[in-house]
Image 1 (cartoon, rainbow, N blue to C red):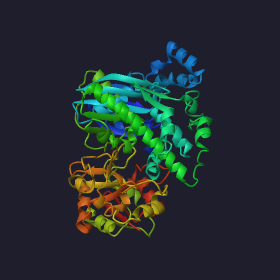
Image 2: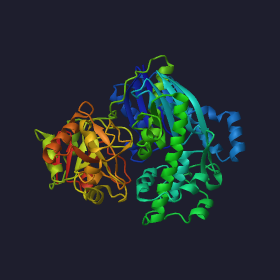
Image 3: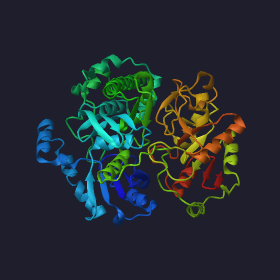
Image 4: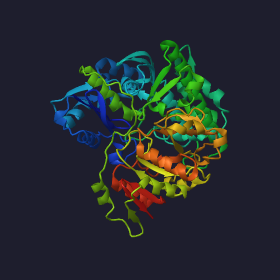
Length: 560
């Protein structure tokens, strides 16, 4: 049985294919249309997923869409119109066109299956997890008028224990203050997280009064926000201003975008991050009390906050944490496809997700075609031992593009569409920023390390294959890998096992043979403002337009 999961109409559109209860393909639309967080119907992603598994639309048994179109019924429309003065009626009317849009793209024959937003999040986190039983924490801005969902997963079933309704939303609160800090809501929350360690939480007491958690209920002081009075996005799809003048009255003028980061901005970022962590940990402790499980699975956009994720073990009773690589709305297509398969009576294969490499792979012929128009200043070779030659370059502090195998899904580059550098030089971070990434200096870069030696460098040192939790760098190692050690001594770690990514694992060991350190700086293969590269043409173009020194693409090594 083939189940096709789709998400579109809001940020992070995607497609996923599940065959006989097992995930077979997943891709995000932004990789095709080069619009970050694309909301377009994922036709190219859908076609690529089907092509990857050798199927056509006529072979699909069910198309699952991760939203509840029943929100457009008369009673719910009337309620929302009363509660929000009609502000949300136009989006609901557009939502009513979902089935028409789906039919236009997938035809009339196939069965459609609509899945609640947070149930799709919960399924995407729990069903691919390594746990037979687990608490599930789904937290984001909003989906189907719910901001947070607490569930229990057991076997292939998921039970909802508690929901928190919009507009009382940790995700939207964090996004509003991300805007106040001069960044873009629903896009740049990671910048707020990255800036936080540079500040002090001097605004935390004031913020606690704006976002309260009492007697199991989360409540925002809505006088400080606007997202309950208007649509989140304007007609061009850009976020409206989510914070009200009360924020400015209380905390001063907002930071002007692209202006210098001052102490007040860093302190506000630190305070907002601390507030998010406090409220999430309170919710998680209540979730543990309700489930008794030692395990928790996280989903929703807030689950991309790796600083919060990395402290769950220390601040809650949960011992084991799993976060899907596409914890954001891109993962909805996975959850929807898995639930549709189960609804049709096909058991979901409870196989732990070992990697995120479910996208397209481009063969040698396609790579060779992309290399035909290279300038004479670029040399091309096909080394007998690619990893050894790349290790030589990295040991000599070159910046190397790494384009291998099937594309990963999710917002993090996990070693198939990556830019790599040697982290043993303190200025490597600044060099990568200046020559390739062109992004804010306060944002950290992540380390990738062989799994078997992670504990040598990091306090927790457990298996972390998806780069979604921070770990403390051991004090004695902070001068060994300074380029991937953040200002607070943390790092957003990715571990690599030989069974998961044999090429990258071999490269890390080759680097160790040269400098004694099986760790590399790993950042996504793109420049600021663009999406992660998908095709060989994308990779070559990015290589030529930036200060990368070399590109390992398939079996070929390009050097400037």
